[in-house]
Length: 103
Image (cartoon, rainbow, N blue to C red; front, top):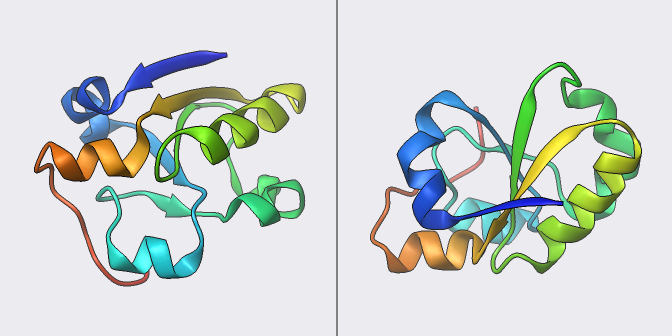
């Protein structure tokens, strides 16, 4: 499984697809700008909402749930990268977060 750090994501996040697999309350409290919200428990039934033709960066709070999502999505033929340290690391760096539900 491919994996990068939150620091590495910060350098590229404006031009990539990010999938946030945390629960709604976590996502609403603050997420990487532009991240699409698909909770881990819904990945098996909502993976049709993810474009197979592009690479996706998958994030959760610390990296565990996103690793699970990546393992499943890789088996389905998706090109995915896990974000080690997740949103927790992103927050600790002082990186920008959007609050509220996605538009």
